[in-house]
Amino acid sequence: MKLLLDQNLSPNLVSQLEDVYPESKHVYEIGMGSSTDDEIWNFALEHNYTIVSKDSDFSDLSVLRGFPPKLIWIRLGNCATREISKLLRDASEQILAFHLHKDSGILMLY
Image 1 (tube, rainbow, N blue to C red):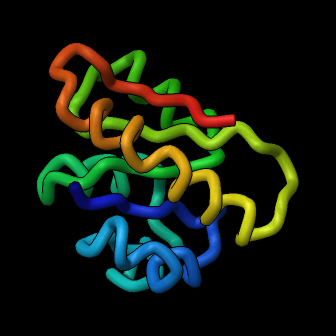
Image 2: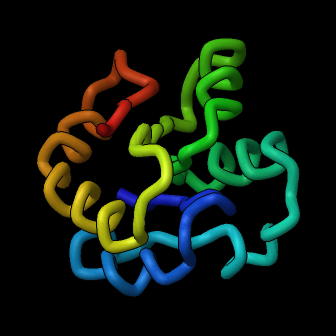
């Protein structure tokens, strides 16, 4: 499973999580640091990524367009990168189950 981390998350998460999510990328890594949500959505769709974001805009897009791509919506508010890293690590089994579930498009993590 490949995660595409949105602009509102630290690019450092990719290296911190590479043992759990090895093919993941941050939008900055692929030259999409200033791209619109639509452009990121379309890239994720075309390249089979699951979007990870703290932004509710992707949730709105998912409701309007359906999925794929799937969305992991992080609902922690202001927090350190290490907290997000821990959340994504601790939820790895839940995230894998979500990835495999054909009828789910949004996973909210708190």
